[in-house]
Length: 363
Picture 1 (spheres, rainbow, N blue to C red):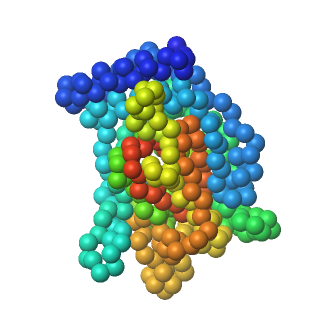
Picture 2: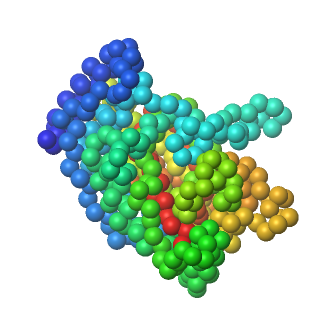
Picture 3: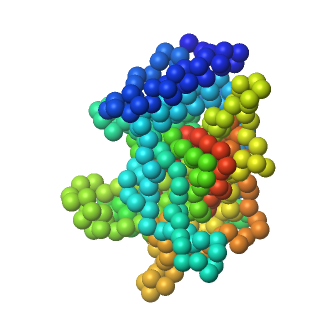
């Protein structure tokens, strides 16, 4: 059933009870089943501005996309998992199990100290045991949200063309070349931008006070060869011909309550920090090189920090041109994974978000 905003105190009460039971929850192998209170109505459709902004800038922002009732329920679900001891330190790529290799330098240039590139936790929402294709844990709203965004970006180019619209033809040639290299001559290559719905990833991310994520891309800087992938997987089965194309985030705010009203305090960037800093889209040439790699000798000279997806692209943080997106609850952000470098600034309060990645066909 739907919980009205006036009854949001019910969520706080349930959450308070679950918090007191942290010690008993931590001994449970799987999180406790979802209570019926988490029946959330499906999300609304996306405004037409999303397609326009993705085409023009590579990033789209939809304020107030999720209503406060929906955010309260999703926040409750995320926090009950945290109190159940079900979350884990977020890693490098995919399911987050790989340790991050790259570290960011200490702000003191004379110091030899370094800190992790990323400081946050996550709960993976993909049901790895499902036998009916890709499905998601948690409220049905998660799968509804994924489907809504997938429908929106289906057929959209995963590459950002910048201000020069004539670059579209170059984009098409890039994707065709990648398809030739990746899929082989026997595979169908129609040049359309197809997404792989069964590969979409989703998770809850948890940034505690002091959490951050240094600048990065959501895709690896170089695509591995078929031989490398086959050696890694230990088999010669069908080679993956896709990679992350679109990233999305739905902000759930924090859980800090106003001492007077008891309601969750709105996000105040001036003291809470935690903004998503988005840098301008990199050029088509840079996107191309990040997919297929720099040619021959230039590759070794240019590639750096490959595990962070930053290879072939320099440090963007000295730029004055960027967009800071405040993680206000209910705000939805979608951007092109291949083109947009971004970072999460240090947060001064708990910061919760639903995050996901939609894979695009390289054909």
